[in-house]
Every structure is written in structure tokens, then in C-alpha cells.
Length: 428
Image (cartoon, rainbow, N blue to C red; front, side):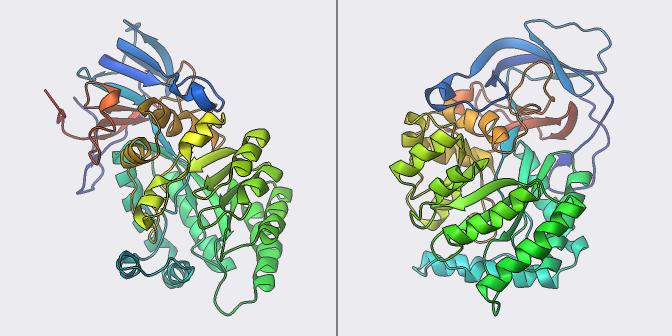
């Protein structure tokens, strides 16, 4: 199959072709949730499974799904080989732009050292010492790997700056990644990730509110603002102060909450009507109830619990409470080096009690809702953007079974083939 000219990258083939009407044939299963809003509770299992269908793409959008679609003016035909087609995966919580790894901290933690804010400060020092161009090169390397694993929409937070200059440098680098890569990149300002050494807490919060947030707004550098609200980091009152200022500047809200302790962070996210509350390992029943009442999406990060040897977030309780659970990688240099959402799905099924259908919904439509982009992506439906992946599997139910494998054969972003690996059927 002719895909175009590969962009130089020794780790995998990376392609783009535009302006084409595309036909995908011989699809064994096309698996997708439906709609433009979050899928709640028990409805998360209600995915649609089409058997033996074709899919047509015109001008970057899905225009038909049927046993046989119109073949007029088709520029490219892709043979799915009986494989599984899914919507492109959506990763709604990452720290994928960083300047240095932290393997010594990781190894010390494996021997019993506690997790502290010192790791974030070490990442901030590394960012301060690195130029924007090198940051972009590092970010590009990781995002291409994520794309090869089927992630077509990704959120990236700042937060390893802890100063006006470095936070803006990170956000400018994220903007460049968004313009240079085919996957959709959404920026979140996380100046309130930790506190810089030698600066009074109140003084740094004042800097966030009076300098950072106005600059982010004026230069349109982020869609969301996040705060690490937890034991040892930002208090509920400090987080409330920062997030109210962010909301006043037109930013939408996210929170890191209840990861290290139940501090009432979920209740704060509900009070502020945040788009999402993330982590939630230690969330209370009251917090779950408040999230449901306020319509806040819980974004769960099982890779972090796995890496920290911590209890997993109570996903089953959340589903039973009627919440629209989303999943994300939390890819970052300190507490989770997992960037493959296939591993996240496997952990969610094996360790958190989600069904494979719930996990698929959680990394597609509900994840898109956690980024407020579900009108465009997160499901394969007529009129939505043709972000999709072809898997070398016989059934979607094999996804968690092949834990740790990357089943992706082909990735399309807005109807363009942007990645392909050699066909390597898992079985058969």
C-alpha cells in the first residue's frame, strides 16, 4: 500500500498525505461508543460493534459506515485485513514535555523512599537550563511514540517551570508541537504544580495570578488551568484562589486531587464545576457523590498507582455511582513513564475492575469529553473527524489479553495516514 514519503525517524514509519478521500475495506470489527457527550455509569458498556463493514472518509471526516459504501472518487483504499478499527485514542492527562529523566528518584522509591515534591523541583531546574528548541525535539520524540500506540489526541501540561519564564517556555514548546505533529495537542497551564524553592507560598501564588495567568490568556497559550491540590502541595483554599483567577481569565478548569490523601479535593472540583478531577486514588464516597452531582468527569490514572505501588482509584464504585469515567496515562518523568494507553486499558481491566467495553469508552469518548473535544473526536460516527486506528487483532476483547503489546497497525488523523507498522497479526 502506497502511503507517501516517510519522515525520517528510526523508530517507526511516519507518514502524512492530505486531500484524499479514503476507503477502508475488510474491517473485521468496527468498535465505537456513540455521541458527543459523556457516557455515564452502566451505559459505558454500550459500545457499538459493527461486523464486516467498510468506512469512507471525505475531506477528513467520516461520511459512511456500511457493509458496502459508495466508491465514487476514492483516492486511497486501505485493506484492514479483517482487523479491528477503533476511534483514535484520547489521552486527557499527561506531562509529556520535560527536560530530564528521574531514574535515580524512581529507583530510590522502589527501595522505600517516599514520593515528595522534590522531584518536581528537579524537573523545573532541568527545564530552566534547557532551550525551547531542545524541549520541542524531546517532546516530538515522545509524541511520535504515543502516536505509534494509537493516541491521536493528547493533553500536555506545563508545570515543570515554576517561574513565569519557564512556564511560558513550556507552553510555547507545546504550541510548536501542536503545529508540527498530526495528532491533536491540547495545552494545560499547571503553574501550580509545586512551589519553587526559596519562594514564599503566598508570593508564588501572587505571581501565578498576577503574571502567569494574564500572560497565558494574552498569548492564548492554554485551554485549561490545573492545580495539584493534595497533601504536601496546594491546599484547597490555595487551589480555589488560583482556579477562580484562571476561570476569570477564560480558562477551563482541571484539578489533580485526592491522590496522596482524601483532602476533599473532589468536593472542591465539584464546587468549581471543573471539567475534570484527576487521580482520585483516595476519593471519599462523598467526593464521588459530589462529582456526579456537579457533572465533573473523573480521569483515572492507573499507571501512576502501578508505578507508585499505591492503591488504585475506585473505578468500580464510580461507575456504579453513575459517573462517566475516563482514563489517561499521566505520562511524566517522575511517577509514570507509561505512554501507551493499551497498558492503561490492561491495568484498568485487571486492577480496577473495569470491563473492556468500559475501558474503551474511557479512553475514547469520555476522555474526549474530559478535554471538551467530543463534538469532533472520541467516536467513529458520520460527521466526526476521521481519527482512527486499525489493530492487528481478531476481536476488541483481545485488547487487555495482549497486555503490554502494541496492536496498532495503522493510524489516521483527520483522514490522513500518519503511521503504519508492518503487519504482524497477534494470532492466526
